[in-house]
Amino acid sequence: VQLQASGGGLVQAGGSLRLSCAASGRTSSIYSMGWFRQAPGKEREFVARITSGGFAAYVTDSLKERFTISSDAGKVAVFLQMSNLKPEDTAVYYCAGLRRFRAIESRPERQEYDWWGQGTLVTVSS
Image (tube, rainbow, N blue to C red):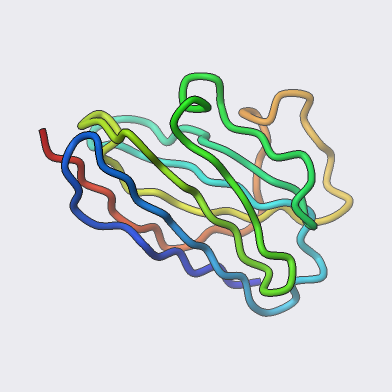
């Protein structure tokens, strides 16, 4: 499975961006896809995930008022709509894929993923 993230860029605080992640290869083996981010000098953190077919969408509590995750099952793609962006949202955003039949963590934030995209940079200016 290969994952290609896109849609990052420079945006002013308060603005919006929509990130996309397209999957290719053996996509039938994907159970869910997620978004993570890593800010400069910080550890990577979980943002959101959605299962194949668009079920069980979940955004981490601290971001759920501003971020929305969705998917397009026909294209095996996942999207992250980000609104009211803040400078602290500046990070490289990565999409990830979880294979079917892998053990599922009770907390989505703790789930390990099997495939990773290359990341797309989001910069929010104040």
